[in-house]
Structure formats: C-alpha cells, structure tokens
Amino acid sequence: MYNETDLDKINLDMEPPAGEPDRQYYFMAKCRRSLRELEERAGRSFTFSVQTFGCQMNARDSEKLAGILETVGYVRADSEEADLVLYNTCTVRENANNKVWGRLGYLNGSRKRNPYKKIVLCGCMMQEPEVIEKLKKSYPFVNLVFGTHNIYKFAELLSASFEQQGMLIDIWKDTDKIVEDLPVERKYFFKSGVNIMFGCNNFCSYCIVPYVRGRERSRKPEDILREIEQLAEDGVVEVMLLGQNVNSYGKNLKEPLTFAELLRKIEQIEKIKRIRFMTSHPKDLSDELIEVMGKSKKICKHLHLPLQSGSSRILKEMNRHYDKEKYLALVDKLRSAVPDLALTTDIIVGFPGETEEDFQETLDVVRRVGYESAFTFIYSRRTGTPAASMERQVPEAVVKDRFERLLKEVQETAAQKAGALTGATEPVLVEEVNEQDQTLVTGRLSNNFVVHLPGTGELVGRIVNVKLKECKGFYFYGEMVESFSEPAV
Ligand code: 5AD
Ligand code: SF4
Image (cartoon, rainbow, N blue to C red; front, side, top):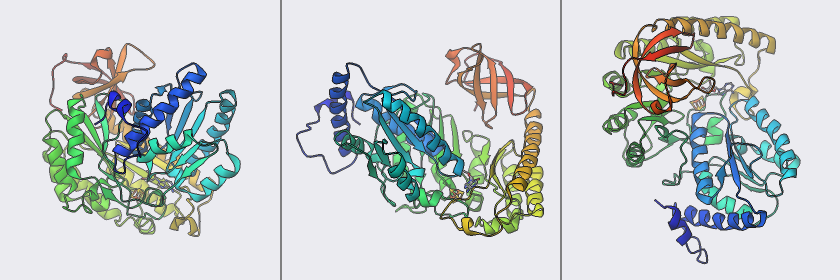
C-alpha cells in the first residue's frame, strides 16, 4: 500500500501506469498537485463532504471515495458548503432520486457563493440514461458524474475534471473488474463493512438493482481474508460482509467456494469477534450456512431475510423463486438450528395486482415469523423493470392504508420480541457516545437491538456485558454489569 510520502515521490512527468491500483495512485498524486495550486490561489485549505444515499454497499463505497479525497489532501467538513460535495446516489425507489434533485437545487446556490466549488455525482442513480439527460439539460453546473462500475477510477476522473471546464461524464454499462487496495477512510475504528461480492443476477421483477449494479461477481477469498486480517490489526472487532445476495457468493469464482466456507475461514481470524452479513436471499440460503450459523461463536444472532410479500402468487410475479410455505419452512429450520436468532426483513406493499387477500397473506407471515424488525416499503415503479409495465397498479390510497396496517403489525410484533429480552444480560458492542445525552453510550446486541447505557467515550469499540433494564419498543436502556472484561460474544 502507498503512504503519504510515496505519493509525493510519484513522477508526474511520466505516462500514467497501465495497471491498477498504481494508475489510481498516480492520479491521486496529480489531483494533489492541482489541489495545492488551487489552495495557494485561494489562500486556504479545501474541504469535502461525501453524502450517502441508500444501502450499506453505498456507505462502504463512500468510505472508499472519502479515502481517496483525504489522500488527495481535502479536509473533511460534512457540510454542503464544502469545496467539493459528492453525492453517492441510490435509485432503488423514486423518492431516493427525488431527494437528490431537491438537494442539487440548493447546491447550485452554494456554488454561486464559492467559485472553487466542485459538485460530484456517482452511484446507482447515475446508471439511468434519463437521469444523465436531465442533468445535462437542467443541471449543467455539476462538474463530474460517474456510475457504479468505474467507481475505482474516481482519482483519474477527478484529475481530468481539474483540467477541463463543464460537466465530465463517464458511465459504463457493466464491468467484470474488481480493483483492490485503494485507500479507505472508515467511519468507525472498531467495525467495518467488507464487500464480498458486487452486482446481482436475480432480476426480481420490481427491482432496478441488477440493471444499475451489473452482473454478480465475487471477490477472491484471499483478497477478502487479507482485508479482514488487516482490519483486525487496525482494531476492527466486527465485520459486516456485504453483497446484494451473499448466499450466492463464490459461484462464479475460478475455484468456487460457498459463502458458508468463506464464513468458516473468517471465523478463524482471532481478533474478529463479531461477524454480520447482508443481504440473504431466501432462495439460496443453504443447509450448510444454517449449520455454520448454529455452531459459530462469532456470527451474530441476526439474519436479514427479505420476505417482500407473503402471497405465493405475488412472489411468483416478483420472480422470487420461493413461496409462502417454503419461506416459513426455512424460518422454522433456522429457528431450531440457531436459538435466539433475530430475524429482520424487507416487505413491499402495493406490488401490481396485490389484492386484499394477498396482503392478508403478508400479514399472516409477519404474525407467524414474529420479526424483530422490518423495513416496509411502498412499491415504487422503476422504469425498465418488468413490474413497471404490469397492469393493475394498486391505487395510492389503498397502498397507503395497507402500509399503515402493516407498519402497526410489524411494530407490535417487534415490541413483543424486544420485551421478552428485558432483564437479560447480553454482550454489547459500544458504538458511540449518545448524541442527545452525553452521559450515555449506545451499542448493539448480537441480535442487532440497540441499547443505551451510562458510560463514557472510553467504552466505544469495546464489547461489554449489559443488563437490559427497560425495553422502549425497539431499543433498550441498560447498565453495564462488569467493567472492561472481554465477555463471550
Ligand atoms: N419498490 C419498493 N421497494 C423496493 N425494493 C427494491 N425495489 C423496490 C421497488 N421498486 C426494496 C426491497 C429490497 C429493498 C432493498 O428495497 O424490499 O429488499
Ligand atoms: Fe433487487 Fe432482488 Fe437483486 Fe435484491 S435480489 S438486489 S431485490 S433483484
């Protein structure tokens, strides 16, 4: 890996190297030179702000983008008044796009006050041709636009944008490339996301992700393990393995390896105390994985298992490859192999043609499974997906009513689940000092429930035993029962 001085030693009179990641480090050095010139002219140092929309994959990408900006010499500011503002966008539902359009209007105002300002857009929304057309027509002040497949080229694109006026756009349709060893600026010192695969091959009929994130490709296990070992050496105790469908990890590798086998290897890294992963598609969840979860001391007692709908008919229309019975049977198998497992889910309301009977099936699954928590979404029509052209789109008022009823059901079952844990003592990874009340810290149980307890910043990053004294629906108030020991996770 490169460090600060290496970058200054790169000879910028030479042609850029062809191989990665060396090529990107060359362009980081070039950006640094351009930035220094600008800073001299302005008589101050320049700041950046990276804003993430959407999922944990995007959050991890943003850490990589921030890593590059810090290496180049920008100072983090977390304000839209920063000299470089980057939006890492999401397009899974229409409202994600709307947020970006709204914020761009505001950024235009701030740009007029700062002649050095750079506005950069990347991520899933940029993979949509209509978005690019709209940007060109109505938002010409944006400096740089790139997509999901060439994110590793950020330094090279930024360098080019220092050298030209107007909007620079670089969008690729797909890629089979994975570039390793670029800088990362982690948000937390004690936990980290780790990409294990990119893209999705499932083509659920409502979902735009396979179109904007491309085909499934897995990172090599040795690269993943090397990254996690390095993270462990840097003080990370919890990793979250990330992929759109982690259960199909490894299928396209030269030497195939299952997700369960990968987990076994990660478990052997001593300093890693907790392993989480998301997302699991029910159709690919293997018996082997259930067995590994049942035996593991480190895999957290939490599984995010998107249901989407409880109606077998709708599931078929959604192209999910399981039905209500199969899903419930899987839940039974998981619950008997992994005691105390918390289940969370994603549910869509108002998929085209959803009837009251279909919706009742969803409510029935929610009651029978008893999720610890659920993300509920109103169906959003995404151009280009098969569901967008399906007939019988459900009227808005009917969808809203179903959504409210579902939310109520989900909240009731979740509160019951949490309530049952009151009085128990559980290991908690302390994550931060509570923003509202500085005498408290906030942490997470293995099953992902949040708990607030008296404590100071010293506890952050430690796993401590906490007695759960009071349940507040979806979180707890607790108290540490012993100081600074290393309890079982
Ligand atoms: N409308 C509503 N929700 C959607 N999701 C994906 N596509 C759509 C859509 N078009 C939800 C699914 C998925 C989660 C990440 O987003 O529930 O699991
Ligand atoms: Fe979208 Fe389905 Fe792929 Fe998840 S599995 S990203 S819902 S297509």
